[in-house]
Image (cartoon, rainbow, N blue to C red):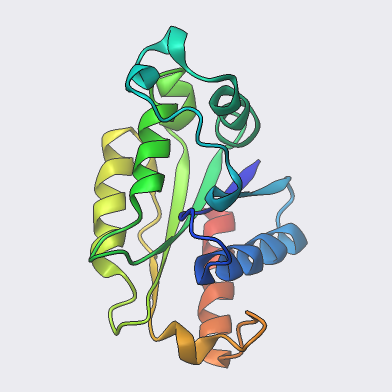
Length: 180
């Protein structure tokens, strides 16, 4: 299974538009199931001081981990730029999932990273930071990361990707990911 993660809890984010595009493209091309995990839709009842105790984890977090993380062999992280990095909710989610079944959640799995930003660098710093974290937990990150910059010029008013060069770059990344 492949899980596409929209890495922000901001409602109606641009990252979600890109994550949906990746999900649709992968669904059409991949020989395995593809699921979209939009962090804007997850409950946050697991964010409490005891979240780092296996016995104190909330059932909602365990359900997310059981549906989207444990069965996945590959992940695509779509991460918007927040203050020169990636959203804290994604880091918190990864930390919470590392408490129960750490190795089964991350170790030896594969990931691709897409950075989206209104600036010129396409969230390169956030991509590098997330890459370091994923390496630390044993996830193999595909070298062909994709920083997408100036996203306000790439998306139309309905959230569709209209820039032909961006569409081509996404398709190339997806094709490489499927053979990775």
